[in-house]
Image (cartoon, rainbow, N blue to C red; front, side):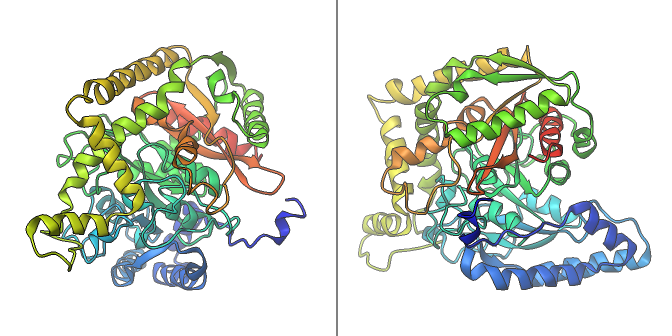
Length: 488
């Protein structure tokens, strides 16, 4: 780090790996209950400054830890995540725990069931610490849209952690959880992972069940893990992936052993380098860091192949038409009648609907609802929403052609390192452009992994995005692991 960065307030902590912790629990040298207690101590120490956790599920976590310790004491086989402390983004429901989605409109809502991904984590032995902060309804690129205040980046508390899963990324970077779950609609796992210097996974659309996810844009939303290293992230994905009868969009494709797949060498893999992702607008230090990562892949035996993805320039407008249209439909259910916030200052049913939504939703959510409603309205549907869906199809086909010639594609995850809090809140378009390198994969439905690829001179993390074809997470993990091994 530069001398400048040494004066920065930082809460980054050395992470504990899943494998080491599980080995200690298996051997009896580490108690799951003590481990959980140590993480709650860390949360109590750091959370007042970083604003990562919105609520804690201490009773449930300690009961799970006790079950793990009892199993270990008997010498019985332990599940893959036995005793591992995990945080859950607050758009995924947990039975009895507050589910806010970062919004006032869900005030007081405590769901009566678990999301499938949450239930699978717990069935695998994970200790669920609590719910972490996020942009309201996962709409944002900085975590400044949360109704409960912004999350601060543990690397530099004057900067954003990225969004919308900023709390999930910050929790791992600050060692307030070993791993977390987040969601990605247009970059909401990958961009925060890049800004906070951790690993984030975008699974193929349908690879992980969306049951129990509070919807933003149903054809784009995906659930994925954050971890401090690629192998841990691969293990997490292996636990939560797979068919779910309660989600008609979930895939029945077999789930590989992702952790084992990530160990495979990359020699001979063909890596696509798209020219459009290295054009004007890319920060020079980010470019240099990604180029070092690409050189490391070449040194590991990969073959580099220049490619072109010319439709990339249409991705941001297409995304902000499709996503906002789906949001306008999904968020119509929040009306103040059945659950959540209800305005006290209404004397008619119509006023109650209007006031509840006006007072309960934040500015960015209302902006996107209005954009989406406009795009779906009579006279504009064909010109905006339908056209956007047609271009989306062309984007997906462009990726299919690219993956016929390469095994993976590498790009920067974000055009800049983490920016200052408040720097872009007054310019929504500038904020939307922070997603310029991530929305294409979201629209195409393909998978990807963001892996740290060095830092800037000021010590700010830079993430490399590794994209792979549908259901080929294994290739993305292999490439990401090779970048990680280079210790850039």
